[in-house]
Image 1 (cartoon, one colour):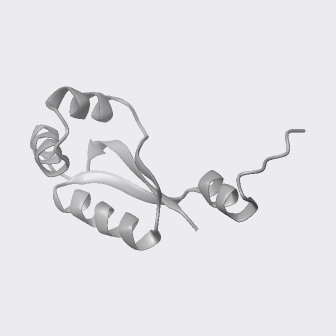
Image 2 (cartoon, rainbow, N blue to C red; image 1 turned 45 degrees about the vertical axis):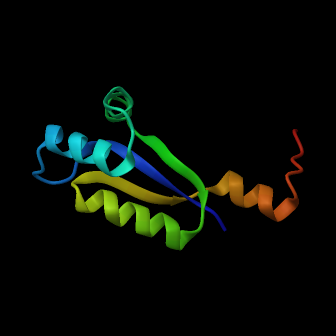
Length: 90
């Protein structure tokens, strides 16, 4: 089963959004303009098709800097893995 990390586009709790954005850019290595775009849209998947352990580890790091993120089951990726990528369109 695969999971994905979804950025909610805001700071968690009472964290300062500007500080969270700066820390997010530092931790992820993403340029400032990409970070701004990610925080401007909600929700925004950051990483897909990852194991649950990896998703939880990444989410914990982002939560530690104050980013609001969720870990969700990546249903489409899990389905593709289960059926070999074959989909019937009705």
